[in-house]
Length: 220
Image (cartoon, rainbow, N blue to C red; front, side, top):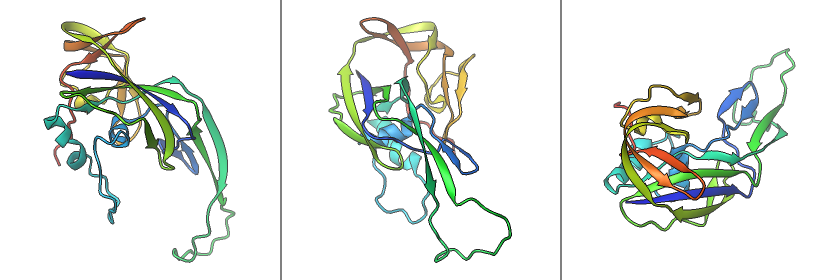
């Protein structure tokens, strides 16, 4: 099995609505593994979808047969930027009722700033050639990808994973963890497990990931 450490450096502002508070849209400082899998070109969705309903199970589950899995990305160096925008006049396709209240015609967005750096891991049963450039977020912001193959050892016992994980995809249940609320599935980090894990050999530190991670989705 191949294991790659992937560093992602934003070249443009990146926005996706993690939380919506009125007309304030906030972007969390993590990249979800679903979005990252699509961005790396490992899964594709239909170009046109009239229903605007995501098909994660249909698009991502086939990667299990190929032994490919992408973790969420952890922020290493992150800053946010904010800006205010005006709402477009949409009366031509939405019939509005006349109201006496003064409703604001602007909104605010908190985005990930350029030069923010993230770390993710990609596991594969075959050697992969990951793209050098990808697009992320609702505005398709450009990001640089640097992938490096790492060695690892498979071990068993009690272990802690500091890296963010999608809890649906981990075969073991964590005993303690920190929750990161973001759609479509909340992530966890600093999770305590017992079972098989991969100990990644790096120059300065050893990192651990659960063994046998795969894309899992609840039954409809």
